[in-house]
Length: 112
Image: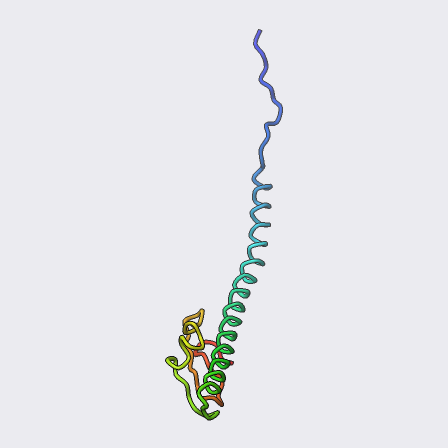
């Protein structure tokens, strides 16, 4: 006697179920990726602002240690390595301008 094949449904996902999962993943990525990029940009800006504060502080320390007038201008050789261990670098490859004692340090990429 010949056995009939078992017609029970085999496990697996249908095309509609897979498409719904892909859609949900796409929506989540659409929300998460812009937030990640924005957070990275904010972190770079914050790092640059902290570097500018360090440069301004180092200029004040240099002026006090050397007995300089407030409008005297320091250069990197005056600040590194005596006050700053190394010259700060902008995370987005901007250039820092020290400025004189009365002016804040500036970055070409991130204005202050």
